[in-house]
Image 1 (cartoon, helix red, strand yellow):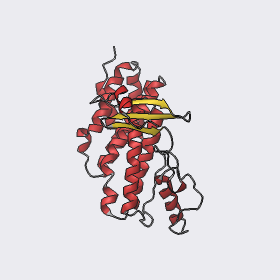
Image 2 (spheres, helix red, strand yellow; image 1 turned 90 degrees about the horizontal axis):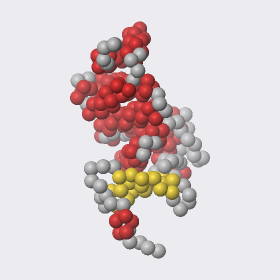
Image 3 (spheres, one colour; image 1 turned 90 degrees about the vertical axis):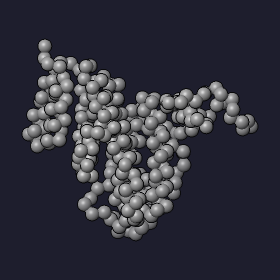
Image 4 (cartoon, one colour; image 1 turned 135 degrees about the horizontal axis):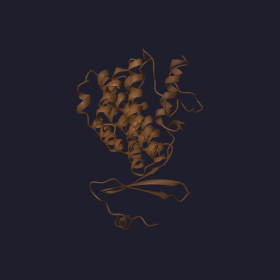
Length: 272
């Protein structure tokens, strides 16, 4: 068995300043994602936990702890069920005004952060490969990790440790939704995905008490740049569509979205 990786690394040189990603087929016939790093190659599964393990018999640690939370909330004790069950879906988040007993200790949170990093590497690779559905799946999943730790970690530092990453994950998710819409030749849906991403970010910054950080946020800048590139591709009738959505937002008293739509209307050229 050859153990020296020199030839493999030579055949695929590392290029600084760009994401070096490719899709290969494994010996089992299943696809694998490979990421070329400066000191080697990272290989990930395309679905499930990226390293292919099943911690505690579950698809991921997140789902193990979500099952444990469900058991706690049902009043059946702190232990997870004997048989693994998929807790929640790709779009699920933990909710409720008052969290149940906080049960994630320091080691639990550390393990969840390490697992989250695996999914981060994968969704960035999938973004480069234009697998937008996979990006939406993994970013939604990582937002569930942030929610879980924020609500159920015992230590305050563990509850806040992942919050700085939330805007970035939200931005990538919105970008992927827009990318998939463009791939499906649906520019209006792409515009809607970007607007909804901007609205969500505006709400986030207001919720954490930093509303002024919205306009200076790099994540907001990224989505606005994507929108600027998209606007020239839209039909002239898009202006009427934006006016209609603005009116609907005002009627629903969704003033945050209305403000964003007004800004976007100003960016469009005058009719004729």
